[in-house]
Image 1 (cartoon, rainbow, N blue to C red):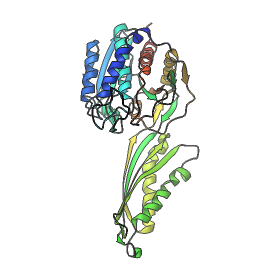
Image 2 (cartoon, one colour):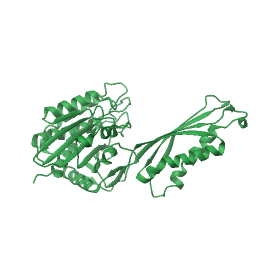
Image 3 (cartoon, one colour):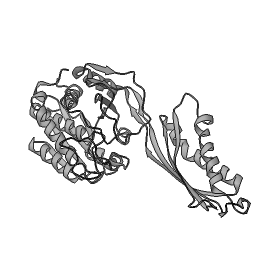
Length: 384
């Protein structure tokens, strides 16, 4: 793999940075130590540092030449509430918190690119190094955008990268269009009327209502959406009752919806309401719905995707553009809703899957990822 020579020279340093971050994981919006480490390194390399967006977010700004085009490179910093089981000497020292998704590696790869680009400045324009908090489902990207990320730090394009277990080291994957799904959550509280289990006719059984509702919600995917369009409706929690001989007053259902189509995504709250109201009305029950559209669809724009593939091809042995979208979600979509961009996957090799207590980021990917970022900048902001 043609890793940038200078980055290969300080790759052992990057491994030290990554393992230090791995040993000190922090949950979303609590990345205080991580932010301090990031800010200190950027400042050490002469990069302009800005803090506070999204609470614990850090933005580094590096200028070279006279060009005014600007691109953003984003890395996420937060960890997950998981007890680590890797047995590594650099395993988490924070009980119940673990870098089980590789954000320690993402942060390190972007730091490596920042170090290299600050030394060489072989580009013409402005690079925004965006270190984002709270990617894991609690809205860090959205918060940074709401705090004025792109008003304070305008970008012509924005790029993201995530490691991917199961894809060989030395392989990148990127494609135009939807790459990750919109992700919603829902809670449905069904109110019936409790009764003795031997006399169900005296009540309104919310368990029966909820059971029918679980099935009825599946018709959104099977009967309301074209078969060729991806939609997942999953009820993942069913809470009802406390004893064997009492029909409860209420039931709570919770779950998630995922789709790759923004139009389908926009329609889901109304479809939910109609189905829930209809099923409840048939049995004389009532329901409260809390439907939350958490993540939009992650959509790769055409020109940034082509540039990402070109840069990846310069540093990797293989670039796949025939991969299929994932039904998982990514809050980087909030940034790409404002600024066109591309999100790329980098092979982590044969490791445990992300969000698993035995997962570990592949340190061999660090130099390649930093080389990708650096090459992308040098090609996107090419000097005349």
